[in-house]
Length: 570
Ligand code: TEU
Ligand code: CA
Image 1 (cartoon, rainbow, N blue to C red):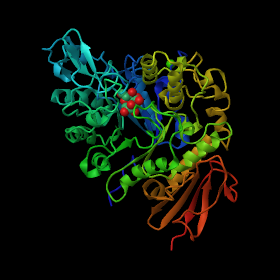
Image 2 (tube, rainbow, N blue to C red; image 1 turned 45 degrees about the vertical axis):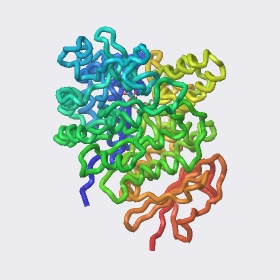
Image 3 (cartoon, rainbow, N blue to C red; image 1 turned 90 degrees about the vertical axis):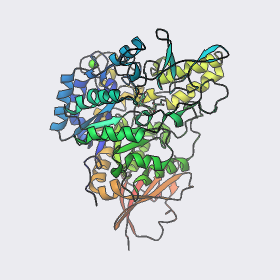
Image 4 (cartoon, rainbow, N blue to C red; image 1 turned 120 degrees about the vertical axis):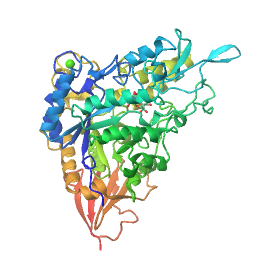
C-alpha cells in the first residue's frame, strides 16, 4: 500500500479574486480581502485554497490572459501581498495553489509582442504562426477549427501577413509547446517563480491542449457554420505525455500538487494515463462528465433542464470508478468559475427548496471519493442570479460573444434571442462570478463601493454573516459534513463506489465500501416525498442512520432529502 499524499484527503476551496472580498473600496475584490477572510475559510474545514489568476493581465478573459506571470494585477495587489497571503495561509495550517495558465498568454505579454514583431524574431516560433490558405482566391485560415468562444481559432496579423492560433479569445494566443526554449521559459516564469515563493501547487488550466498534433480540418458537425468543433483534435495531442513528464520533473522538486483541467476526454484509459501515480504526469484532473450535463454541442445550444437523473449518476460513476483497482486519483466537484450554480442546475433554486438542495449536494459530495473542491459561495448555497436581470449584467466574454453571434446569425430575431438568453440564464459562467454576500448591509458587505458585478438580489437572506450564526444554514451543514468526511475518510474519500438502481429517475442511491465498512447513500432529487425503499442490492441488511439533511428525518424521504446509513456487514 502506497502512503497517502497530503492532497488526497484535502478539501480545496476555490477563490475568484475579483468577487471574493474588496478591501479598499474600489468595487473589485483583492488579495488583502482574501487575507482578511482566511479564518472564515479555515472555519469551513478547508485544507487548501486555490486562487484563480491574480497575475498582471488586460482582463479580456478575467485574468486567463496573462500579461506577466511574475507580477500581480494591480487592482488585486502586489507580489508582496501574495507573499503575505502565502505566509498567512501556511500559518493557519492550510496550503495554497495557484492557477497555471500556460496554454496561452495575453497578446500583451512581451513574448507575444516580440513574436509578432517580425518573421525573423527569435521568439517567432514561441507561438503558432501559419500562412493563409487560399480557396478560390479568397484568403482563409489554415484550418476550419471553431474557437472556445466562437469564431475561427486563427487571427490574421497584417504586419507579418500570417495567422496565429488562439483556442480562446484572439487576445489569448496559444504558446508553441513544440519549442523547447518556450517550455523552459514557461517553467521558470510561470512555475518556479511562484514555487520559490512557497506555493504548494497548481490548478493547471486547459492542460490537455498543449500538444496540437497535425491541425487537420475538423469534420463538419454544424453545416450552418464555417467553423467546426475540433475539441477532440486539439485536446490530448501526440506529445502531451512527454510535455507533462517534463513539467512534472520541475514540480516534483517542490512536492507540488497538480490538478489539471481535462475537457473533451471521454476515454477513461486516456484519463487514467494522466492521473496514474506511476505515470508521473498529473496528480488528478477535472473531468467534465458532470458539469457538461445538459449542455448542447456548443454549450449554450441547449434547452435548459433537458437531462435526466440517470445521466448524472452515470457521470459521477465514471469519475468515481477511475480510482477503483488502480493507482489513479480523482476529484469531486460540481462548481467552479466556469459553471453556473449547482443548486440551480441539479436540484431546485425555488425559495422553498434551495436550502434543502444545497444540503443534499453537500451530503452527496462529502460521501464521494477523491479530492474535494468547493467553489466560493457554494458553501452558502448560492444560486444563479434572477431571470429578470438584463443582458447588461452578463459580463463574461463567453456569454456576450454567444449572444452577439445568435443576434447576427438570426438578424435580431426575438425568438432566437429569447432562447439564447434562456440558455445563459441557466448556464452562463456569470452566475458564479457575482460578489460573495458577506452580510445584509449595502453591496452585500462585499465592498463599500458599487461592485464590478451586481451582487445577487437575495443577499439579505443568503449571506455569510447570517449563516455563521444559524445552525440550520447551508454553511453550518457543510461544516458538519466536512467533519464527517474527515472522520470516515477511508470510506468516504478512498472507498469504492457502487451505483444502485441506475435507471431510477428520482432517487440517486449508491454505496461506499472500505474493507469491513459499508455506507448506503440515498438522495431524493425530486420535490416530492418518496417512500423509503431500499434499492435492489441493499435489501435485507441491518443498518443505522448516520446522517440526514434534516434534523428530524421521518419515515419517508422528504423533498430533496439525503441520508447516509451505515450497513452492518456479515
Ligand atoms: O477553461 C477552459 C475550458 O475548457 C472551458 O471550461 C471553458 O471555460 C468553456 O469552454 C467556455 O465555455 C479555462 C478556464 O477555466 C476558463 O475560465 C478560461 O476562460 C479558459 O480556460 C481559457 O483560459
Ligand atoms: Ca479592491
